[in-house]
Length: 213
Image 1 (cartoon, rainbow, N blue to C red):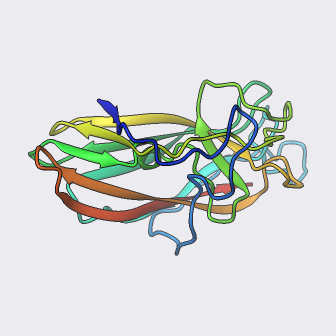
Image 2 (tube, rainbow, N blue to C red):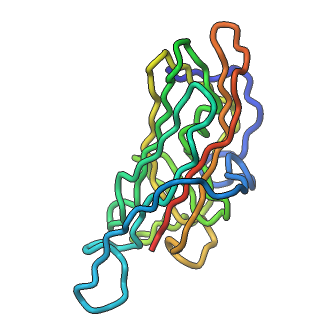
């Protein structure tokens, strides 16, 4: 169940054109621990192209995730679409589960599912799936920043309940490459509060690394 604080802290733009630098963007951080994942390749034509067959962009793979935080919640990330096509950019799904025995409230509601987050080098951005964004066709690089408000949203989870968000991966505006190749880290802050008194029981940063090649 999503809830929003009544007080609007600040707004990072008007309409759909402007976004102030750093609004809901990712911060720097060390790489996480995890297991490398093999990336499917297409080498039938004898070239060194590592794009999966029949796609229009580099292949996406999950390289690693941070260890589970010392908190009663479990964040997860998975790849749902491993390469760009003419119709869609690569996709991921972020999930957070309340594994405690009490109702918890988490914030910020968009950040905990990595919506609107930039990678730590500001070359890529994760945006909620199913929306139309200003991006170059068959390229999936944004042609202009996305407007996002900074109201502090909250998500309340009962014991055993999860919240998920399907995401799509876009190149940031102003980059030379459509979807740049390499390894990229995303991370986000989490705040966990106990209900009904609202006392904070945990705060941490959790992240993951993906590769595009």
